[in-house]
Image 1 (cartoon, rainbow, N blue to C red):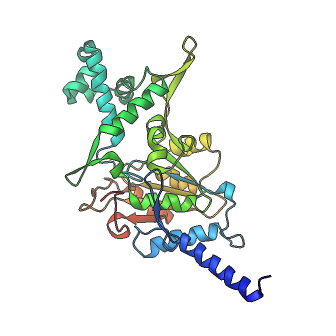
Image 2: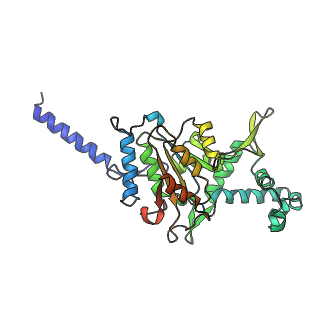
Image 3: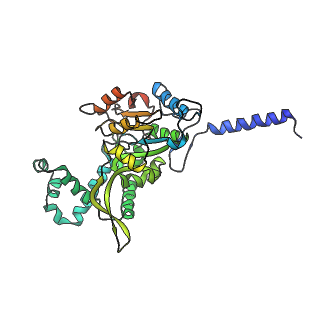
Length: 338
């Protein structure tokens, strides 16, 4: 039989091995870098914001803490464009432009019809007189008429070939992801949070890459939805050129309710169009301690510097005491691949 001292030495050795494994960093099958236990957010500069995030998560996961949140209520929602990846230009809009060109090439007669003719010729005078819904319907027509399987195949082919320009350098689109946010997603999930994307983009577009790009399953993507119809002959669901629900501004809390049925305790968006203000305000209505994170695009050297004309998002952050990310000051690195 092993003596008490031998058993104690074995226990200490085992703890050392476990500790050593815990601090190892690795890259999972999705290409998402996972941080070490010693520093769960290595791409974030040390400071008040980083410590506030870690402090919030620690309290949320400590049973005897006043900030404890049951696992089933640890819901986190993230906007996509400008929050998880770059949006200058918006990646889905570029795909829509390509789909529109393909539609016109396939149906040349459309090029002589309005509003298609005006869109192609960039007729500002005509476009200024047309209702936005009419223009949206014209664009959406190029994204409809297919099955979801066909659409997803088209989107994945697009992501396999398209490139993104970051500071005059050409990159695969996957490089446009923000490394600090990838670490944050992983950190939250490793502490029992369920992470959702809540985007103004179309839900099907983001679903096609959500697992590979963010480690988020397709059923945890919330977004603008097109209408569908069931084709009895083929027994398939077909996309229609009409919007069922817009997931932007006040539509984000509505879609979160439809999709999750719970108020997120952690919500992250960005400033540009004011589209995430309502989601962050909604998060503050949780009965549990909540955390709101707004990304400020203030780094013209490493990314793109821009702001809203009315500064609505930053002003809302000040009034509601949200945490604001300065990309320039809070992030050591910005993109997943420098």
